[in-house]
Image (cartoon, rainbow, N blue to C red):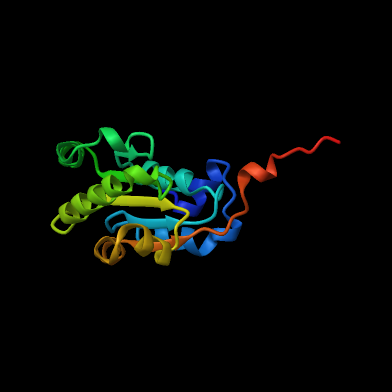
Length: 168
């Protein structure tokens, strides 16, 4: 059975990767390392899709945290997930309600502590650049997260805008 590289895998899924070829090649070259990425880019660049495709390609089970379910998550949930899945995808970091920002920061700290002695994965998708991350969540969280994740920047145009139709 032939194993596809990540670029071939994405093309087989019908996904356009032209503008982010360096990111895709980096992921492919690091296929045997822990999945630990901070995927940033503008709205609609495919960050969430890329995060899921990395897990599908590597055949890793994952759970996804979103701004909508932050309030329900406990520390016990995080430890339980890492017993049962390979990767946590923290999707759309920074999009949570202002009142949930402290909770998001505490979740990030819990995850980062767990990752220090683990081969489990974490993918964060966000519109926040590294300066925004520091401003939103603190130097402490910034240092722990950035120190454990590789930053991948997507440059694709918004796929939603490509489907936009203006009728006059």
